[in-house]
Image 1 (spheres, rainbow, N blue to C red):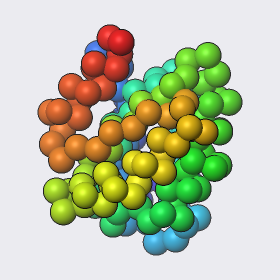
Image 2: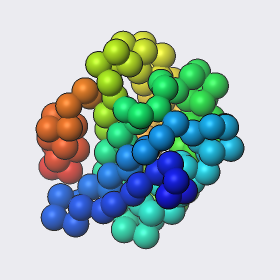
Image 3: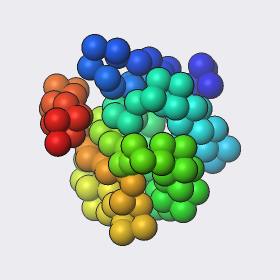
Length: 136
């Protein structure tokens, strides 16, 4: 994972930060990265995730469907009563419209209520959103 994904836990903020260092070459890399993210989230018992995907192309609809159909159920099972999980996606400004019109609607379908998401272009508002979710 370390060749394309860096994950750190910010204890004071209770936020797990996942930064994709480079583009994932295959769907298997994409899926492995998210499975590793879940493993680290479980290790730190942290449902608040900053997902910095600026170095990756926007998720395609197929990847977003994998997230909802396979990954989100894994998250719900792993965290159980702690659901929902909050995923704040940090994206390039040129990718924001795609995330808002394609990726986020797929991820926020009724069947994935255990995974709440938002997209941002600046890390400050991303962290602020995660902190608001912690207080609610």
